Image 1: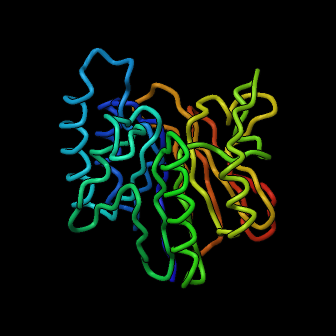
Image 2 (image 1 turned 60 degrees about the vertical axis):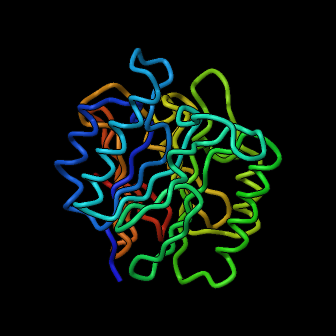
Length: 248
């Protein structure tokens, strides 16, 4: 079944961008937020940011299915094993809002939402989550995971690369169809970077981040097997079947 997905990441408590997402999300079957909803460098205390983000997530979930994961800016204290976690994104949810640690099937597509991990215990929880979700995977499987995988141009900021080798290994093991990431803000615009990359048969995406009202974002149309990227006045389009860029 055809599903249209709107993907953004690294909103970083930019309320204008969250307002824009509220304006447009009703036009899509799902909204993916691939981490860093909060901004630890902001003058607003993190606990206050969380209250505001909870309100926005509730509003968005009234418009469409929302699938949100934590990034490194979203951590709010140690979990039961002493490693930093995003406790606020691990709270039980109702309705059409899904967050860290959950998997949900939407019209034949499974979304697995991976939290940011801080050490060996939380890393092992993510690994177990992926293995459990793989057991009865449907035809299409999508992961949401904040850090981009090693071996792709999504890791480059133009000067250095920040590869996630664990994610790359898990992709090689499980071969999901799509992986939505973020974290490296500059990747889509720098030499050696991109908004898309591939490991085997798996497509990975990073929309990037700039401080604009309309955040960089990606639209996936599973019926057309197409991905479109909109980033700070630039547009890109990718045919997911042929692997070739197409005119936007």
